[in-house]
Image (tube, rainbow, N blue to C red; front, side, top):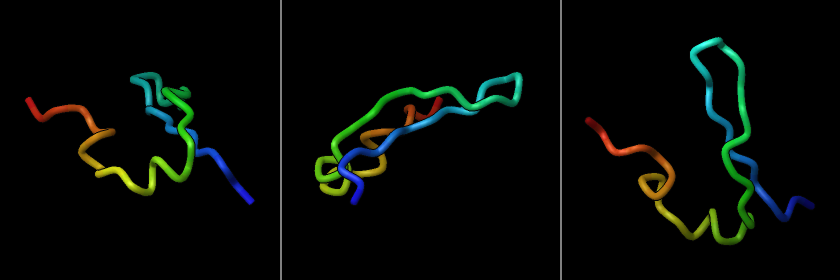
Length: 40
């Protein structure tokens, strides 16, 4: 059973890089906007 979630970002070169690792329980209680960059 997974206890952590890993968030990735797609780079300009087309590769994925790890941005953060979070406890799964915390991630499930949060809002998607907590993890997305603000719109410009």
